Length: 195
Image (cartoon, rainbow, N blue to C red):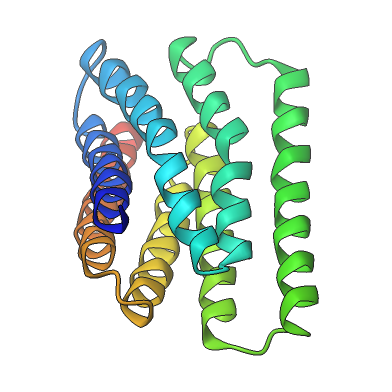
């Protein structure tokens, strides 16, 4: 079962990063199709990650994965509407969910462990910040999201190494390559547009 969850969660998240990275160098409607597919794949990978993380009592990271779904749905909505039809209520709900997830996961972990007492909790905080802020900024079409995703990938890869999840560790490192590629593509496209 553990192997199946690693393959499911790891492959869906890797496909998400590949689609996002490849969308940066494309023109419409291909760019939109890649991003819509990427957001959908991301959402479908969440259950496997939540199960794996909760199984190791990584409460911060598990709550972040589950709590990040609204940001992913916002990304789907904004991408579908080409970022031309902002929905203020939806944005507020996502912001509330983001901060609530951050607070809940952190407080629950601190209460369960009697504080921040382990390297895994520190890594989970890196995952938390990278995942939620990366998803939030990507949903708003802001390239800073790539940098937060890099933090998430590095933190999660290290956490998975410490917890003997080699498939998920490898997936995170491969995903990091696509995150770097996506950031570089978005940066060069912005530079070309400015000139």
